[in-house]
Amino acid sequence: GAGVSQSPRYKVAKRGQDVALRCDPISGHVSLFWYQQALGQGPEFLTYFQNEAQLDKSGLPSDRFFAERPEGSVSTLKIQRTQQEDSAVYLCASSFDGDSPLHFGNGTRLTVT
Amino acid sequence: AQSVAQPEDQVNVAEGNPLTVKCTYSVSGNPYLFWYVQYPNRGLQFLLKYITGDNLVKGSYGFEAEFNKSQTSFHLKKPSALVSDSALYFCAVRYGSSNTGKLIFGQGTTLQVKP
Image (cartoon, rainbow over all chains, first blue to last red; front, side):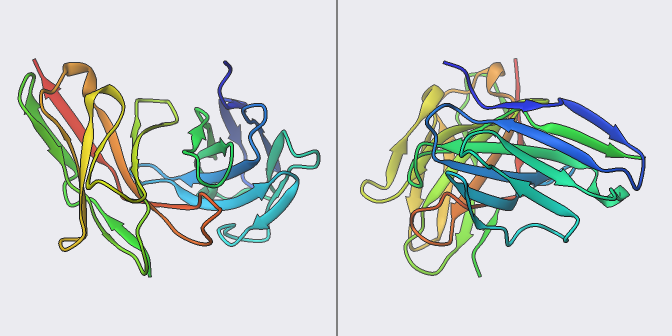
């Protein structure tokens, strides 16, 4: 079956621009996570949804970062007024429930110039 | 605080030889431990997990990992390495409430298997 799909695959933004990154989780997966992976580092947790409820947003680095999952399926991570330090790969992952392994998408590589 | 350490940036091994990728952890309470593999320009793929039970956990692609509570380690192993095993490997520990998958990842170890 289809895996986790993320779009766009690559995004180049000028500093100060807003960006929106999309994640289509595996159908039926309740849990959805966003991670940020800087070059040469492990992924770092950003936020977590259970269906449409955002239960944990403790990893969002600033109030410029916003995530939503309004119908409990597709999720969007929005970054306002992008800064160079936002350059990273943004990974989305979903799981059937909290005990199941995470299934990751291929990520969106964001470059802020 | 929960943390994961992968002490080796890179591991080199000849094809056919056994491989070990090291991981140590620090958690309060019982650890939930995971290994993921990442190929270039791809997301992470689940290999195996330890929740409870046998200390030797078997996973995908012939990999296994040994949980050692006294040494707080969860090293990834494979008896005979393949060139196609060359990739970036991440150890992770789950933290937070028991019904979330929130993970802390190590820095990653690049495995290079040479023919």
